[in-house]
Length: 582
Image 1: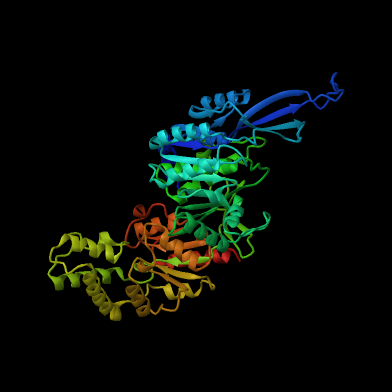
Image 2 (image 1 turned 180 degrees about the vertical axis):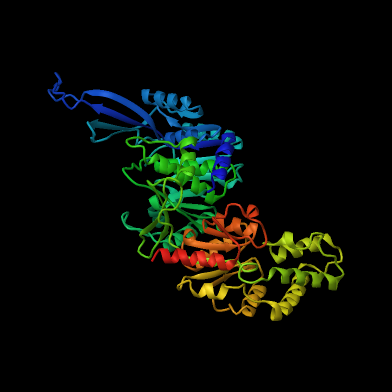
């Protein structure tokens, strides 16, 4: 993610309103006196003298704390606490963060505020004391809680549902009411992070870890054994089929998998070297995901932000830490030698890494595992032929060409151009007839005038057996016609065309599909492009993008990792990179 985009998102989140309903807890830290030998007069047992004690947000409270640190403009809390000193402290801490606690209900009977008390003897944690983990919500509290939430839902940009305790506010009745709200076209997205009841929630965005995803699909996996990407893709699709909402699967240091029902993306994790503490990382992740989805960020952007945030909090030891905007910007701007970006995964589930020096230049570089080529203007000099084919077709129909010719449509699809022409001219024969006519003229031109760019065949032959794909916005019949005329028909392992995806460049779907067809991670792919939409598509997919300044100046292709004069130069760079890894 570009630093400028990160800054934009962090600025936008200041205007967001996010609600959290969940298991609101406190984490307590009690420092015991290791030298105390005093005995109780009553029991004659050794006294545990507490020298210091502190309290910090836990569970849903930590989700709220992370939202506040992230800079979310307004936060509303919905939950249940007891009429005890811990409930008072929890409310005080939330209000000190600027949280609206009007949705917090005090249940007077049979409810104790949830606390996880961790005694320490020096640096060694002793047996924990848990409060309020077997609470039972009564019907009056249920009705009050859901009523407050339903009343406030219209003012939210996102709602995060947290479920952490085996017993608590989340009775079957409450879950039923939450599902009802989710099914009634709520005014905001609802994101669920549930430790025990993921399968009970419906019509919500699910954030789950890999082990939980496997369990939801009826499979058990050892927590110490990596789950493959193929398995995770299967799990994500199966869960989506049940829920009809996006699925986000967290993978620890390996990052996240996101699936929106159409395309699946693997977002690389940020692995921090040195001592880390993962406690509370899940809260950090769901808070960032909820906030980003609430402001309209894409799933990939939301997961990327979540990875950045968790890379900050896992470095904060003996606490459930948060990530501030300044810390997030530091991660985005100064990936240093202590941070590795998990970029790919081999068949055994082991990770490879991309390491950066302090000046943000690559130290070892990422392993190139596949090369994805745009077609027109990259492999073959077909852009002029496309323009001439359109001009001939329109001339036959007595329709004038666009005032600026066809240059503005470079990187777009034939169907998009046909739809534009059809909409602009009453005497158009219709979109499908326009496409048939254009293809006929294009095929005629390519038979005698189309060939690969200089150096393409030779350069590709030196790519050392790497998987290769063509990713184009052209119709398949045009793409295969061009490849055949250029003598490249059997060069590529996959060809992704207009018909293969629902969302086209600049959306990442075409390049994500190509990576999946080649069985590689998008982050390990190099994309060669010459258009604005193509560069944007490759970048959004997480690929390394090489831009050719053949049709457009470098300033119009901003964001690409490298710029080249021609395809042959780009191929030479790839060949050198492959050689450097040998």
